[in-house]
Amino acid sequence: MLLEYFQMVDRVVALDGERITVESRVPDASPVFEGHFPGYPIVPGVLLVETMAQTAGWLLLHIAGMERMPFLSKVTQAKFRGFVGPGAPLLVTATRTHDGSGYAVAEASIESEGKRIADAEITYRILPFPAEELRAAMTATARRIGLPGHG
Picture (cartoon, rainbow, N blue to C red):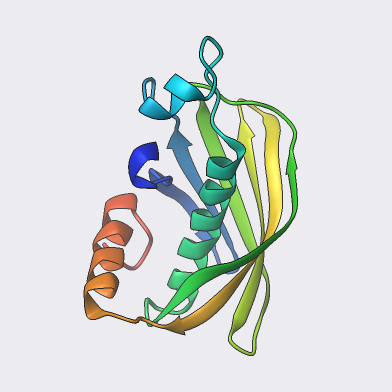
């Protein structure tokens, strides 16, 4: 996980049809922790939402065969149930719950050491890739994180 670069997914550990599970590890050090919060560093909630959004996004990219790009459109029902700090292992799951009319919806959650940390319902606008360079970069990242069928 590289917080400063918004690379939140380290490795895909399972992909089964409409559901994906990924692992990430919060870095031991990050400039993010210098301000959030001094003396008690925790991952900001917005970055936990981004982690869930990226996880579900990888599922949608896989389902679309890397032919269409999911763009974050809406986050609802976000709940934060605990904190995670430097070095925490994260297990993130996402399930596609709706697809149609150019939109997709997923439910996602984060656990750390067996405890639920956050969950949300996330909506995406599904569009053609706006640039071939973006598709190439996403394909390279898919290989790096072990997205099945892209390695």
